[in-house]
Amino acid sequence: MAVVADSDTRWKWGALTARRLAPAPDPAPSRGPDPAARVQPPRRSASPFASPSPSAPTSSATAPLPSPPPAPAPPPPGDAAAGPARAGAEGATGPVRAGGEAAGADGADAPGPGAVVTGYVLRGRATPTARQLAEAGLGTPREVTGAEFLRAVREEAYDVVVLALVGGAVQAMLHGLAAAAPRRRPVVVTGYVGVVYEKLADGLLLRHGADLVLANSPYDARRFRAVYEGVGADPSAVVRAALPFLGGAPHRPVPGRHTVVFAAQPSVPATRADRMYLLRRLAAHARLHPDREVLLKLRSKPGEHTTHIEELPYQRLARRLPPPPNLRLVYGNMGRVLDVTDLLVTVSSTAALEALHRGVPTAVLTDLGVREALGNHHFIGSGLLTSWDRLDAGDEPVPDPAWLADQGVAPPAPGPGGPAPDAVAAGGGADDAFAEARARVAALLARDTLPPIAPYYTRASAPGYLPGILARHRLDASGTEPVPGTSGTSGTSGTSGTSGARAGRGAGRVRRVLREAAREAARGAYRHGVQHVAPVIRRLGEL
Image (cartoon, rainbow, N blue to C red; front, side):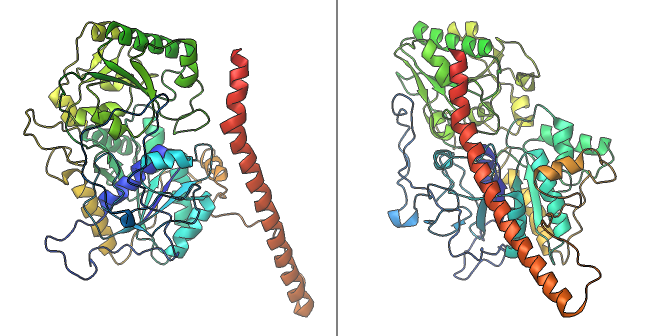
């Protein structure tokens, strides 16, 4: 099984989804290999999908994160090792089996131990840093281009490929896989990393052609099928599942503790005025309630990038506003933050669903309006919409149970004896949410042959749109990688023609190596500019 992602958040979604799709363990495990696990281990000597260190600390802008409730003892040191500092570097201890040690801090233990998962991350603007990968706690993937990933799929003969990518990249990989035409192609799975509140039709049609398009809730499944049916595309690939990182211990109030967490978003709201407003109101809430600990949960450090570009980091805006002593800026895994959260406040972050699944009181702000641009319109009917004024006065929203169920959220039963919600138990038993998806994958793997990949967009249906998408991933209009440096030798025969062809191929190889070296240098310069130079220029512009 292979996972390819293009940001830290999508890497987390893809890695956890792959584990959820792994075959469930047999009731009576045998000593031999699991016959249901048809995924093949990679042929490399060391998998890039390594277990994280169980002792890796959560970083904080000002002080350590408050200690969560006691957790089970970590595995012995020999069972886990820190991932390498750079994607693709040596040092991995071997492939992580689904449901193994690297389940992460979100409580997302996986049911199936029979699959080996290999991770890749596409080189680009949002390529995660070593710190972001360590924070996700799911190992270190190899950094590749789209063409390199397609070659790896051909060479490794994976049974299942999870495309944890933005829509355009999914479309490019689908066409690349279709053009590769291996003897037996992999089952292709894709989906969304969180709340889907914008570009619904565009994103879904770019994902069409995958064998499974996972929907995170009944609500999403209905919308996805309606879009496909409305354009005459086959909706059968839509499979209801759940956000794979839902889970963790249920919220339990602690006497004397009241921790308020504001879940920041990289691009919502977008303007400086709106972000400063939220920062001032957060600080005002902390001053009004000095007995509360108020945390500003940040997605990334300055210079790092996530799925969305953050032009105005709260870290820098906070310098203009002296914070009260009980307000702190924190980084780290959201699952760990929620362990100590008594009220989560956000504009429209997916963290709201994570909090609700654990029974954490949650508020979605209306201070800047309820607008599509903010994404909080997704929470209409949830009972969660409120304002800072009401929160300052002590009012906390009560979620609507029907809305929660439709969003695939299953909060724990009230009372101290309620069990912790399983990471995938969105409305049923331990593995209900991914049971249909696992069954669909197993049925496809059992077939002698799989039908050709048939995306909705083709050169005939979208001649002005598709070529540009493919070109951004260095694929030509047919979905194959262009062969640079080739020149014809027609009209030449015999020994001279053969030697001329060899010379031409040799020169082509040299040009290809030089061109790739130049591209690699350009990528490095671009990344340095985006992650280091551009933030400095923005700061200078603020003076």
